[in-house]
Image (cartoon, rainbow, N blue to C red; front, side, top):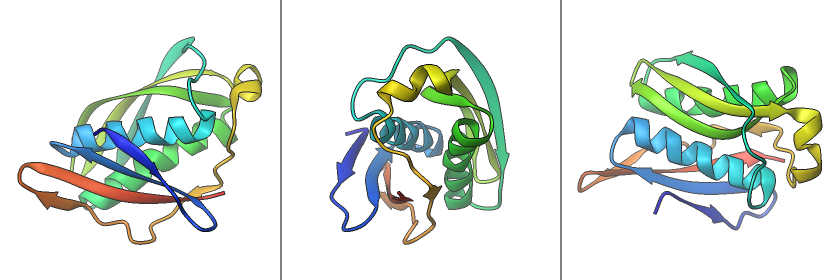
Length: 137
């Protein structure tokens, strides 16, 4: 399982898993994109590089997802694919496939306001990591 969309009382939530932090971030980003588009996103027109730095795996994950929202809200670029090039407990480098927000607008199904840190804790078990992420809507 890469990710699953969870029922949440007031917000949106996903649970993502991966064998390492790189895969965990990539799968969490795929779940976030699925929330944004409610299914199949438009095809990417080009890629942009995104780098984040933080202290600890949870904050690296949080900041990476927060940067995807920044692209959408502040840069006018709708993320549609995410490939994590590198990730560790100090930072991550992502390649994000994007389209202009105006072009993606008809396909957007949910507008996420923020990536919360509520209960954000990576769980490790038998070589797999998982995390639940709640998004403010």
